[in-house]
Image (cartoon, rainbow over the protein chains, first blue to last red):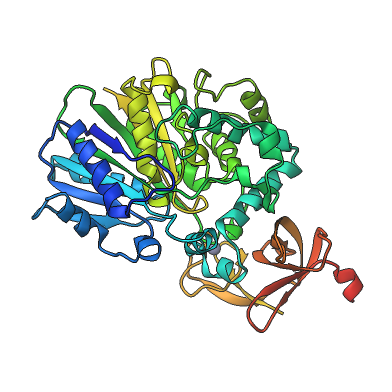
Length: 376
Length: 97
Ligand SMILES: [Zn+2]
């Protein structure tokens, strides 16, 4: 199999945007293609979860191809919940590694602020199993259920708040982050309870945004190798899992990506994790095998996951501070790792970053994609 | 009494019943069983101005989700399914009997 490289990236600032989904997508696409030296694009893959509900528009891939002046070029949209971005990346990767296409554009985004917070939660809850739906479960419900399990075992409010604290601190250094302001432990600890024990600052914001990458069989300067990619599913009705803290799909996806990249966890220099809820970052660190449950709080306190720490996590600010335009998040994560591996992350730069990992959840851990990128 | 599924291959029970396969092992050898009415709360979440919701493990190991009725969360609970198909988790079953 041939090497597949990321040769161009582009991203719009996450946040509350005045622009339509198509404009966000067109802009990040144009930036990525330009960053790729205006290479000839063979096809477009579009990641988006819910343009129908959020914007009333279907066939967003055709629309984007048309706006980009790509008449005649193949285009398709891929929906895979909040892992739509990574799924479109994965499909694009298959198309290039197989030799079917040489260079393709992947654009993933979401316009979410067009609806109220309540409507947004409703739209996102459509990804749950019907039995969960009739009991009014939402995604934050699962965030709260998981948080309580950790708290029952001794995780304190202050320890949980370390996640939000770090991610806001990193977001403050990221020009495309939704929140670019540091916050205090007091502010996190006294923020309103949304679903007890979850507080507002345990939950990612509702963001608009679009990010793009160009992947190619070409090798050129600054090319970042797609070294490994893996996906796995778990039971769709999350309550049925034997242990809610056991992220089986993450473990399997990581094993597959690691095997393909022929690396061990010690080779990974930094990670973008799916912190839709702060507890997920902690749970993912545990399930990736980085630290045991009882060691994690101390690791946060010791600064292990900070930008200058041993294994930086969510240097972009993560979903919490960079933002979570659901269908777009997977590509935003890849964007951050590419900036880091190129040495272009400015105030967020991780020293001598060679290998980075992204974890994108398409649901509450029931569909997980892990990507490993390497400086070539 | 609530119905659930029992997998003759792996011996596990699940709710709701399924048409094609066991969610744990993928076998299609399943039969309908009555689920026990008692279990323990694994975790719960409390929404503003709404009933709490919980994940409960029934006494045979089957996991369900449902809405908690009452004002205090107790670990041991009794389960009831309403005509609308909502699973109600009754916290103070000892007082109800
Ligand atoms: Zn079975």
